[in-house]
Image 1: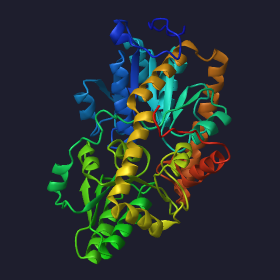
Image 2 (image 1 turned 30 degrees about the vertical axis):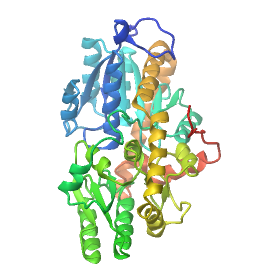
Image 3 (image 1 turned 135 degrees about the vertical axis):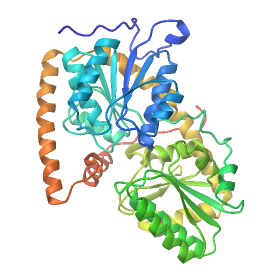
Image 4 (image 1 turned 45 degrees about the vertical axis):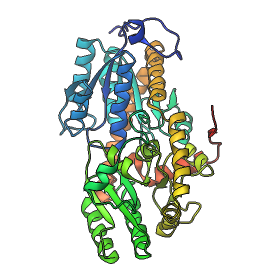
Length: 455
């Protein structure tokens, strides 16, 4: 079958497209998020889809049903539904992608995380030679992804690791933030009033999925640190916004903390489709990944939490660490390990409005300079152009076909073995040993500089 011919007009790669302003015809993009659950990477994907559409391209969202589909509709993006219960990767989804490529003249398929990328490769790239781009916001890149599909990853360490592993084109795309909508002027008073947060109370906020992998340790440590602060007489409250499989465990721990403190110091609100009000109401944000960055956009000081006792306050001194390894960590931070280290960081913030203001300004400046949605859209748009104009030769695609097929078989056997031995992880590409390897190897290189002064 001859290669798909893009209708896109000639323009140098690296030059931002402005089709809507110039009245030219843009690309047709099939955007395929890995899930429609409320979560940081999914929200980032939809924000990015909207930003790409605003640059003059036609964007179609392909996804399973879920809470975020309503957000897609509010954005006035066309939505095509696929079954929620299916194999991953799914042959039926591959056929759907192929049909859409043929019938709708899709120029590029953008898959988020490994199952959509694989389905796009077999559904669009192999049979139709249509450009495929992948985004990985997990903490590592699956070894069986096609080497010639251009990728974006969330940290510089992961980008270097993927390039060393043989991927042809890997761009850094840190979780984007809509700095126009998310800003320090957003009013959070209504949220505080609804939940009985007093004006003199310092509100700490965690906005995340309540799941065992990556999140649970930080959630429980934050509850315990807040208990210690409350018992010591600090006017502090912790609000946890989110839902998930670990909610029962988090709720039981919160109830024990509240009983110990003699008052409600930990509040679980459940899931919010758009938790902007919670960020705005907070005095301090505790989190990781996209949630950490979004809190910074609201001008809030940030404490990053991870696993194996990791926590670290964002300051100008700790910033290079996060720019290299991402907004997450393993093991001791500069203040130590576990709940004691987290309590020290929070105590500093709770006791100093001046420090909260200074660090909040640092975070806001950082998001404007480095993590804006406009910057992310420009990176992705140029990657689309490159993928369309520089397709891999047939021989390379055939090699990828063999590599992916063999890798999927090996992955399936490995996951069955893990389940049989009771060692399976819900997200194997976020497993601690993989993350630790990426961070350890990445620290051998240099991190990217960031200027905190005027541009």
